[in-house]
Length: 312
Length: 244
Image (tube, rainbow over all chains, first blue to last red; front, side, top):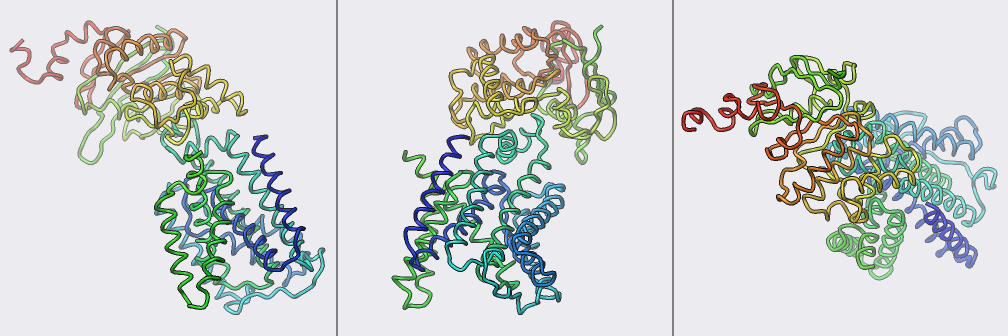
């Protein structure tokens, strides 16, 4: 545990060094988006990698976080920092609700994946249909640039905030690797019956994992809104975010501490690289990106982290 | 007779038209090393599932340590001291032997370091001490059987249900395992084992129940049970007596 936390601390220092070493917009944006993707991937990894529950609809929690963050500011004039706390809390509660309905009835594997996908879609349609979300037009966050409003003048502030969230997610993941709860969660993942036989309650264990996972996903959504100051149902609850979260974790290495970071970094490098090389031919970059993804999953079935571990 | 640890009263379960267990009643006194034997498909493992809470009986009651636990969830029974192993071994394959056993130890130990230390002690007891850092998936069959046993033992059970811990082992491995099981019973844990290896049953068990086609057909000491004509018939079929 201590070693893991020292690693997280070192990682934070390196990122801070990288942030303040340059003021290039492209570079800062790249750093921010990699950290953001790391948060989503780590959030998914807590439930999918450590708990073995593969969600295909993690956008559900992302969208809840983003919309709560926006609605309480726009409609009720709440401070953005308080809104962030609330957004994380409501997303976690959403996780608890989803977990309660799915895990109580023992939904597993592809059934769980389908139900999460369905819930995200239902929320997407709801967000289009009701008034207080701004409907299909989306929700705009008025520009009020100040740190007190969680709208930083430069990328630096956002990166430091996101770094804090990512470090919190890493700390929770490190705790999963070295705690009773984490041991029980991995036991449920590897063999639910055997876990039950030694006194593990699979329902409560998975419920705990989905709450933690949803909380970080909600933080990601709230962060997205603060940075881009706009959210609509497609962005918030659409499959793109769900896929980004799960691909980052799977490519990086499920059930590992550093896998989601490796996944997020490699995916962003690949996306940027293919866009720069083939950007003038529309679509080609995506084809290459997809092909690379297939190759990674084929030749590194346990992700980058698993591949490094086997070589090392 | 000592206080019964486990008591079944007229327990039955059917899967569709198959009456897997019919009207089974048995009493296991504390401190006994008992065995449940019977031909393949007799319903022995189903019996274990009914005792430990993995299955809920259609009829009948299960009492454990003086308490009605019929249909109670297995993890709650485990917390009260009812542990079981699986005939088809169920390791947490991605984890090391030490981590596997620690999951059992965590039932009563919250701290990670303490649970890992306890895992080491339990591993020593079942002869896994040299393989603590191996991934569970790399163990031999004999090793996995020991791991099943160790994980259940780490929960500090009052009653241990052992489902064929000797199956698939070679004679030498069986000879090594018998004293381990006896040591567990001598440490004060009540043991009920399902076993096909008759050498072990004769060697270890104080009391034997024989199950055939879902029904108890005999019980008693190993010697009386094995000479019971009904038991011979259940194993070898009609006419076996005449031929013998």
